[in-house]
Amino acid sequence: MALTATGIGSGMDINGIVSQLMSIERAPLEQLTKRESSFNARISAFGQLKSVLSDLQTAAKALNDSKIFTATSTTVAQNAGYSATSTSGAAAAAYDIGVEQLAKAQRIATSSSSALDVAAAGTLDVVIDGTTKSLNFAGGSIENLRDAINGGELGIRASVIDNGTVKQLVLTGDNTGASNAFSLTGTGALSGLSYDPATASTDPSSSIYRLQAAQNARISVDGITVERASNTISDVIDKVTLQLSAEAAPARLDVKQNNTPAVEAAEKFVTAYNAVLDKISSLGGYNAETKSAGELNGDSTLRGIRDRLRSFVSSDFTGPSTLGRLREVGIEIEVSGKLKLDKTKLGEAIAADGAAVSKFFAGDGVSDGFSTQASDLIDGYIKSKGLIDLRTDGLKSSIKSLERQRDALELRLERVETMYLRQFNAMDQFISSMNTTGNYLTQQLATLPGLAGNS
Image (tube, rainbow, N blue to C red; front, side):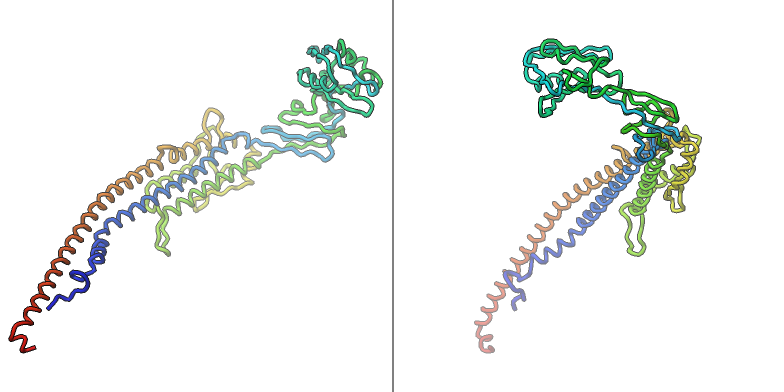
């Protein structure tokens, strides 16, 4: 009786059988893949942790600016004729400031009825506050003269105005203030530009006449009259700059403490710190409902970073300030371990002693403040070859080891698959041979007399 096999040879699905056997043989390879995926997930998790720690370091460094804790702001009454800005450390106070006169630059013009002929050559000496600068002009048009003056760095600038009758050359001093009045001495074709502010004409028909005299700005500050050469005045009230725009009666200026920069910087630090704790909780936690653990669940490095940060923000601070804890500057530690900013308390601390708050966060130039110490602590974790890099380097080394194991296992599996195929193909050939022999014997037995009669 022939062996019950279908198909060529044995009739067995050799490829299918070998495939099933190889799926069993590949189980260790799948385990290596799972381990590699786990290592890659942990590397990614450490990258996420490094990112939020970097954000926290940036926020900590922002607190290292002493100016934000002594910032001020200004308020000026409407239609005051001036605006004001203040810098860090300006004294909180109120002032009555009146703009009696704006600073102006000298401006003169050539005749409004007779054209200035500058076709021939000439020279022009410009004297400002005892300093003389000269221009040699080769001759040409009035526009050529304008361009020569503007390119000569003489302390004056020129323009040409066509009034409908003639083209007038207008000369204006570069700077405002009485001391910046200029006189001119011209020769040759430029002799008509000679000008003396002390004897200047205001008659437009003159060869050259005054449009505007140079003058200082004059203001009153709490009844005290002050003159300056510019409309930008920064040396009358300490750390306050006035920008004059129009003559006006005295109007109130208030200089006040401005807590906004300090509050914003503190808020960013608190937010960044809490984000780090949230990320650590996410990466290291375990969800009982979904029965899923974070990528760094049980990781000692993660726990160490969390514990060190909590200890740092809750400990007495050793620094140059009389203040020693975060809660004294309005940053409270909640039961959860997260931080919370009390803006009012921070403002009160700044109002009471802004210098102490500044030293607490930014140091005093000799001893480091909270900001630098926090940044240095975080730097140990995130810097190149820091703690997190060392951990990820170790994981990457483990992945390379797994890759070597995988390569070796792949080679072994190739050999095993080849062996299986060889063995099953040999068996297939043997069964095929046995089937052929069986068929032959069946045919021969059928021809025997005794067997033939029985059939």
